[in-house]
Image (cartoon, rainbow, N blue to C red; front, side, top):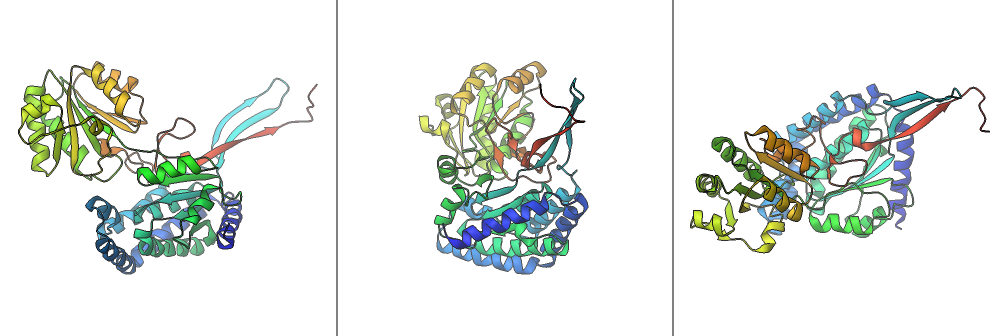
Length: 417
């Protein structure tokens, strides 16, 4: 292991021990100072982002990747506001989760505590730098950030602001560190646990990155592999609502993991709904690929192959299929979905409850866009990612999900017979 990486891990472990005991007021002061530093240094951050953007243009990155990379004054303000929102959340550390007294008089309590040191490996999303750092700080964890090379300049500029905020609040700046090298070996060091200093890995990026982390990590991982998300338009859906939600779910931002990739339409309303949905999507610049029934509804629809039903496009492309019922829609989702986010559009409360109860995904919505699959929209302040596993954390991973717990046992001289 590179000595510089080992030293980074050691600094993080030391900072985590102090941060775990930091009072809420001090952590909140650091978050407020971070947000102020980002606003104060906006020009420098945008200049750094412009350098990253120039490199992206030279590399001919896909438009969806460029969109993730791009910072604007509005997006920068959203990053700062996200830190303010995290500061406003209740402190997740030290919560009393349970308390009981045993027959022998021992009192047992279960309290929330930080996980320790969290390694975040992500691609070209500068906002993740601030979100991850802020969430780890609020939950009492040290963060080691390994961002993508495409956003390296932007991330460095943001981390400088986070370090300023920590120092202003009297906290160790090593609580949030960025891996100093773009060498891929550094990722391997993190996945191996960085000499026992990393307690958890959170990958945030494309399928290849997440797959490598899931395959090679020697420490626990919070992640999702893909966001193959569905919107089912039921026979009792309001047509205007269906058009609005489908358009937003697919096209608001096509490159995020909450974007819808497949639209399922109940056969009972297909003659009416298919032309409407196809038109609203194609007018917005979306390519529609469909089954035979969908192709028959509009000449612009391209044939969908078997692989389309299991493809995360992250682009202005959507697959569309006609199903006979909510039951068939759920069968399709179970077969092709990634247990990320699914939505049903219906005015039938019983059908909605069946869908919400039966579909086995981390997030299931009724009459709302899949693009709400986001920690900020859940009121978490921000998210470090989405988890589709079933242990400890599922769905948006916010401050509460970045804590674990310990037991405290108070006795009065008891011994075990």
